[in-house]
Amino acid sequence: MNKQLLFVKRPVGPAEADTWSLVDTEIPDLKDGEILIKQHYISLDPAMRGWMNDSKSYIEPMALGSVMRAGSVGEIVKVNNHPSFKIGDFISAYGGVQKYAVSNGQGCYKVDPKLAPLPTYIGTLGMPGMTAYFGILEVGKIKEGDVVVVSGAAGAVGSIVGQIAKLKGCHVVGIAGGPEKCKYIIDELGFDGAIDYKNEAVRARLKEECPKGLDVYFDNVGGEILDIALSRLKMRARIVICGAISQYNNKMAIKGPSNYLSLLVNRASMQGMVVFDWADRYGEAAKVMGTWLAEGKLKSKEAVFEGIENFPETFNRLFSGEKLGKLVLKVIED
Image 1 (cartoon, rainbow, N blue to C red):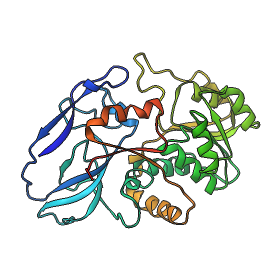
Image 2 (tube, rainbow, N blue to C red):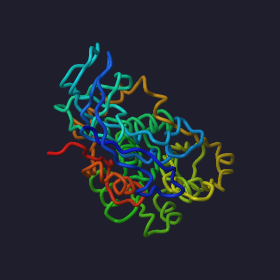
Image 3 (cartoon, rainbow, N blue to C red):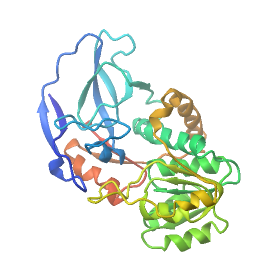
Image 4 (tube, one colour):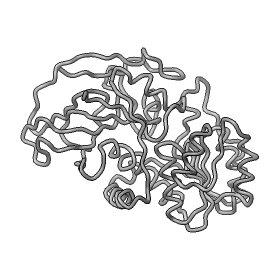
C-alpha cells in the first residue's frame, strides 16, 4: 500500500491542515518503461505555496485531487523494462508527497549516497543549490570586490548564495530572522555581516553594513526589505528576484516596491530567475558545488523532520522561520 498526501483545497492566506488529505492507496502495476521509487526524503520549498494558486506562473498550478507536488530523493525498488534505471539505483525526482512514486524516468537523475547524504541532493546539490549557483553567478553576475546582500540568508537558497559570493571574493551581508540565524551565517558560513530583521531596524543597519551601497541584492523575501534594498543601490547594481516569501500567504494583493525609480537613477537592473532555465547545466553546477563540499569550502545544512502525516505543520515552518537551512521531510521509517 502507498500513503499519499492529496491537494484538496486551494488556500487563501496560509495553508491550513484541510488543504490536504492523507489517503492510503494501492500501488499500481508498472507499465512498460516505468519504475517504482521508494521515497526516502521529500523537499519542502516556499515555491510550493505558489503552486497551490490557480493563477498563471512559470509552472502549471496543481490540480485539486492530485498528489502534492514536491521534489524527492529515493531508491528504485521495481523496474519494468526501463533502459536507464535498475533496481537499487538512487534517484532525485519530482515524486510528490507520498511513500512510493511511479515514474517513466523523465526528470529523474541518478545520485550517489556514498558521495553525499541523500538530503543534500534535494538541498545544496538539488534545486535550492542550483537556484543559488545560477542566480548569483549568471543573473547577479558577481565579481571580486562586489558588495552582496542576500535576504533569507539562513535558508536553503540564501545560505548557499552567500557562501558562493564569499568564494568569489565578495563582501557579503545577510538578512535573517533572529540572533541564532545571524550568528550562524557569520560564525559558520563566513558572512561578513548580518542584519536581524526581527529585532533591528533594517534600513539603518543596511546603511551601517553597506555605507557605500550595494552591488548585488539577492531577494528571497520581497516586500519591505526589497524596497529598502532598492534605496541602497550603487551605480549599475543588479537585483536578482528569486522569491518573495513575505508575500506568498497574503490574503490581499502582493505589495510591490515603491523605490523602483532607484533602478533608473542608478542604471541598475532587476531580473527574475527560475532555475529550470538552466536545467541543461545542472550537472556542471553539481560538479563544482560537490567539489566545494568535499573540500570544506561550502557547508550544507538540512533541517529534517519525519512523517508524511506531519507535512502540514512542517510545511508551515517555511513561513514561520522555525528551521535552519534546507527543510526536509523524512518519509521512510527506520
